[in-house]
Length: 123
Image 1: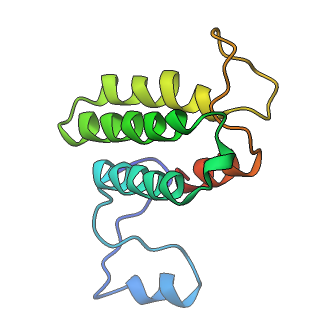
Image 2: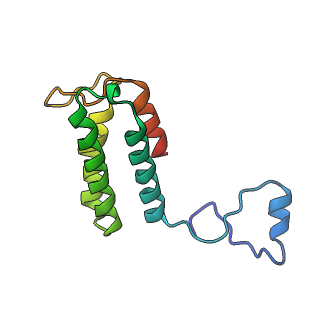
């Protein structure tokens, strides 16, 4: 088990942890399903966004497509290319309010609130 965690016997002594408001995780956390769910949530946020939140209508469709591509790569356990797509292609295109500009100097999103919602969906 990772350092700082305790394997408790919930039948014998585990309720003491619950009673003291300690964090108890029962079962494993599947990180692949977690990121797939988060990318699905991100796609939903993009689809629900107003068209005027994007510099051009084609950018909304392209962002949905690229997010689907990253999700599909991760679903197929191609983690490195999937995370590369997410970090290099998607996140750089939505980070408009930090002052960082892409090499092509084109921001796909014009509304500073939309990137916050997109990044929140990945938390």
